[in-house]
Every structure is written in C-alpha cells, then in structure tokens.
Image 1 (spheres, rainbow, N blue to C red):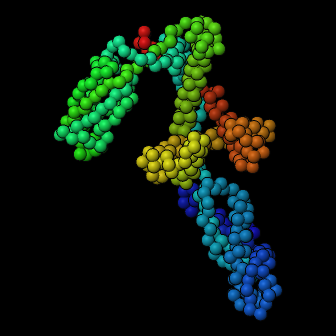
Image 2 (image 1 turned 30 degrees about the vertical axis):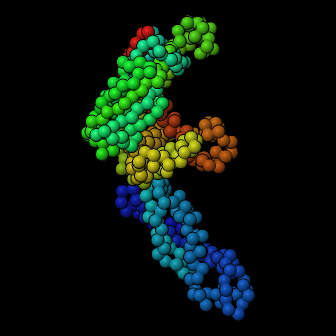
Length: 441
C-alpha cells in the first residue's frame, strides 16, 4: 500500500489518494473467501467445498471485494496519514475509486485535520492577582454558617408569626364563592418569606397566633399557570396550628466542642482563618491563571473545525451524564425534568467547549515552540493520578486512555507552567470583606 498524493483542498481539509497493490488485494480477497466459504450455498456442493473460482463465476468476480476492501482500507489509511504528516480530527470520508484483481485497490480519503495555529506573546504576560487577607468578619461569617447548620427548631406559643418563621396551616381558597383545584390543604408546612405562595399570602399570615382562624384576600398574577385563575381575587380561610422558629446555638467553647475537633473558640477561629486563607489563595491563583489563559488564546489565531468543538461537547455531555448516574439519574429523565431537548442541552456547552479547544490548541503550540517533552516517569505519574481520580486500577486507565493522549496532557501542563512562571503580577488587590450576618440572630 502507498500514498499516491496528499493535497490540501480547503481550510483544514486534505484529500489523500491511496493505493493498495494487486498482490496485497488478492491476499485480502482470498482471506475473505476462506472466511465465508462455509456460509455460502452453491448448488451441487456441500457447504465449504465450492472453489473460489466457481463461486466467483456464479455470483460475480467482485463477490468478495467488499469484505476485502473493508479489511484493507483502515490500515492503508493509517499508513497514508503517517506518511503525509497530517493530524486528522474527524473520521475520514472514504471513496473507492478503482478496484480489481489486476488493478488492486485505489481509494480517496477526504479528512478534516487539526488547524494551523499561530501564537505570540505567551511569555511575560501581565495579569493581576488578588491579595488574600482574611478579616474577622469573614471568620465570623463562617461561624455564623456553622450556627445555622446546627440550629434547632423550637415551638413558639408566646408571640405572633414573624417573617422567617415556619408555620403549619390549613387553608381553603374561594374564587367567586367556589373552591378550586389546588386551593385546599391541611397541616401544610410553610416558611414565611419563602415566596412559596402567590404574592401577599405569606405577608397576611404574619401577626397571627397559634389557634387563630382568619381570612386573607389575594389576587392571582396575570401570568399564573392556571389560566382560569389569572387575575382573579381570591379569599382564603386559614387556621394556624403551629409556629416554629430556628434557635441558633450560643457561640462558646461548648459549641466549639460540639461542632468541631477543637476545644476552644480561639482554636476554631485560628483553623478557620487558615482554611479561608488556603481557599482564598487557591481562588486567587485560579483567577490569575484564567487571566493568563484568556490572554494566551486571545493571542492565538486558528480556524477551528466545527467537528473539534462538537467532540468537546460530546466529552462534556458524557461527563455530565456520568455525574447524573452517580446520583441515580439518567440524562433523558433530567432533560424531561428541565424541559429541554438534546440539541438545546448541547448548546449550553458550546461556548465552554470552544474555549477548551482553543486552550488545548494554544498549549500544544506552545509545547512545540518550546520543545517541551514528557518523560516516561511523568507519563506514569499522570496515569497514577488519573487512576486515583477515577477510582480505577492504573492498568484499566492505560487500556482506556492512549499514552499519546496522556503525553499531550503532560506537555500541556508544562506549557501552562511556563506561561505562569514567566507572567508578571501587575498589582495586588485586597480581598473584599465578606459581610457578616446581622448580629444577634
């Protein structure tokens, strides 16, 4: 087999003319005959006893050609790609142009290739990195969240309903003196201020006490989902059974012992300060690197084939589907729940997918320009990292992910490191203080 010609026919598109010699084609035809002879019915012969020449005479000389072609073209195509030096990013469109015993096989492969990439100014990029300083307000806010998580519900019987309370009510609604579907419930739990009910309903529960029966009047919105109720004035008869409120624990050493591994409030605050600083530093570093990456791809020019973006979307959809499965869901059920079809769902990933393709192309180009390499040790280390991330054996990961792909990942990471290590920090912006919740809650 040989590459006859390689011609660029359009942007990111090549046409390869590939030939397989008559001798090699003949061997493939003979192999096809031997593989199928026991399956062919030939009058006057037991299965498997009819000669190839007799079968071809009876069914035509090209009877075994299709299987021979299918057996030959994948390897011939791969060899031609290697010889031509192109890098396909999509399946090739194959067209057989000539085939015969004396002629062998000639075919044309039209293939989309990785785009030509130009990039400049990827070193010494100026970018801002936030200066991380943890304030007392941020620590207090974390402690407040711990209080919220450890709050308990307590019954209230000495005051009226306030915003934020949890109540249990019976309600029956009337429109024009008649009840309506969905307008009645008993012992219904409701958080006042959650806006679970139509505007005005929850506000009119405020001020009433346990055991009270009262009426409230509200108007359904003009865009309410039930058309027969749109814009209608409605009277609800209410009975209030329970009022509950969230009681937050006091912040002292006993609270600290209950909710953490520490014995004193000072120890907890010191640990929170450390963790907030680590979290803030990571966020600042991620933001800094994202600025660098945005600048890098902004300095890159390439006409990206749509198929590369589609394949990137495929990966994102697969990852999303995998995460759904971990939660016991499937993609079709999820799409029905959110009211979205597959096409619309894929579009939600389009912008992110295009950016990922640009990043990959830019980093690969930097790797080429800087002659970056991946050692065997680095490739093995990457496999170990992937095995840990996916909770799989390293040998399983090796079977699933080709070494060339892992090598590209290692080189891309080195390219990111180079961009980051040569970057210039232009300014340090202090972290904005986090507002603390109102005291006394």
